Structures are given as C-alpha cells and as structure tokens.
Length: 331
Image (cartoon, rainbow, N blue to C red; front, top):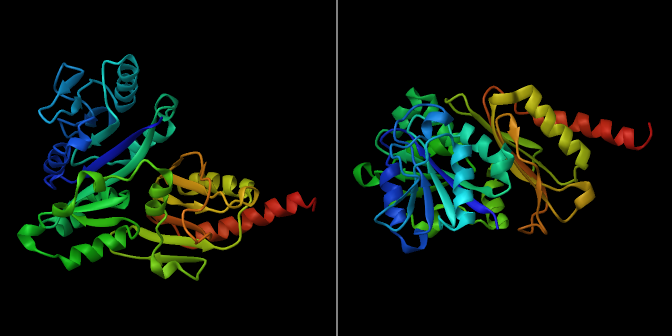
C-alpha cells in the first residue's frame, strides 16, 4: 500500500506550525510522520534539515517527528526502511516547508525519484495564507505567489483578526481557481488533506474554472504575472499525442509552466481517464482510473504558468494530433 505524503507550505508567519499542531492533536492523525524545517533556508537540501540528532522523535501528541539529517529523498527512504523493519509506525507523512520555500523541488522529488515513488504518493499541497498580510505578501514576494499557485487547498488564517477579506479571496481565486479555499478555523484533520483514494483526489485536482466550459481554452489574468487557463474537449486524445504533448510542453515551457493537472480521455483507454499531474518541467507518469469519477467524460486540463501563451497548449495539441493521425493512416 502506497504511503500518502502531504505538503504544508505558506509564507513566513502565515500560521503553518499552529495549524499543524492543532491537526496533529487529532487522534486520527496520531500515526503521522512529520518532516519539519528548522532553519528557513531556500532549497530542498536545507529546507528539510532538522536540529535533533534523533532520527525519530516521539511528540506529546503521539505523532512522530522525523528529524533525519539530509535531504528529502534520503529522509523518506530512511523512513520507509524503518517502517518496513517495524521500528517506525506511521500511516502518512506530512512535510512542513520553510516560509521562503518553493514547493516545486519537493514535488519534483516526490514525483521522480524511484526510491520514493515506489512507496510514497503525493496526497496534496496545502498552502496557508495570512488574511492580515496576504495581499501585501503576494505583492512583494514571488515565493508566496508560487506557494499559492502550486496549492491544491488554500487555508486562510487570521480571519478572526480582519474578518472576510474579499480582495484577498479574489486574488487567490485568480492565481489558482482550481484550489479549495478554507478558513483555518473550519479545518479538521479529516478534511485538511486530500484522501489517498485517487478518484477523490482527481475530483479536486481536475477542477476547471467555470468560464472554461464550452470553449477549447479559457484564461484568467491577474497582476501577479501568473496566468491560469484550461483546455476542454470532448474528443479523446491518442495516447501518443498525449505523450508528445507533455514532452513538448516540458521542452518549450520548462519552469514557466508552474503546474498542469487534469483528466484526459485517451483513445486507446476510453472510459478509463488518465490523470495528468506536472510541476514545471517534471511530469508524473499518467495514471489511469478504472472509471470516470463523474458523469462528465470530457478532457479537462488546467495550466498555471508565467508568460505561457494561453492558446499554446491547444494549438500544440492540434498540430501533434494531426501529425499522429496522419502517420497512423500511412499518409
């Protein structure tokens, strides 16, 4: 059974540690290994260094705090080794990043390292946003904008101080319209992270803005320099065309394409949609569901990027698909 990994991020002072501490007091989350950052350095190797010489620390909540020195991959592999040996007992892993961290390298490691992917699966990215300082932070710090753009769920803290902040909510929806927005006071342990069930995760990850319905692509622009757009189509996509599309997006867009997520009806696997998940230049291998999770069987792909023309994926797909179909017909 795969071990779900949830990532909690958010800018300095947003309330990540407070939220995690409250969640871990829930008995249902007692069997959780927590990877924490003590130093606040930018980058994967520094973000996950802890200050204790102990490999596993028993917290007063009954959870485990993983304090292995080294990078994320080594930490996760060591955790798995200890779990297999019976010296560590946990059902899930929670990673808390530093306030200045870009979540992308963490997601890259979770998606590409063979020693990690054979045992662990991404369960979602939760970004905590400070309702008091959130708009100013987004204006001043690109790290904060990337944390929001890469999130599956946005938890809004300090609403008890300022009340509803309509401007911030609109800003967050513009940056990442597919993410759930949840007040921190309403967050429960069971509801914070995506279920490990792939269908439930897909329903959230493949959310498409309303304006995308009925059009081949749609875009939401905003002042952060990050653009969100989607591609929706009824016709299935040949498997080779999908593979070539993801490769071409990687080659031409690279780090400018912050995130891609969606469901795709593949010609050779109709009725069993492919789950697409990419972060910058890294795409996880498509995973196929046994069936569509809803009555909507259309292909839906959401793109979040910087300086990526919104028409580019649709036109690129059309050109690739025409080439594949022509080659298949012997033309």
